[in-house]
Image (cartoon, rainbow, N blue to C red; front, side, top):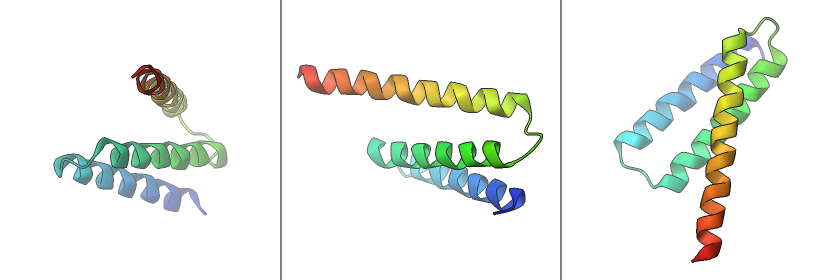
Length: 80
C-alpha cells in the first residue's frame, strides 16, 4: 500500500472515531477503533521513509497511554 493510501486510511479512521464519539458510541467500540488507528499509524510510520519525528513521538505517546489505560482497566476489573 502506498503512503497516500495509508494516510487516507488513517484520516478515514479518525473521521469514523469522531462520528462514533458524536453518536455516544460505547467505550469498547471507540477503543477498538483507536487500537486499529494505532495499528494503521504504526504501519504508516514503519513503511514511510522520512516520517516526521513528531509523528513517531505522538504514536509512541498514544500507544503508551492506551497501554496504561488497558492496565488500569484490567486492575479495576479484577478487583471488583
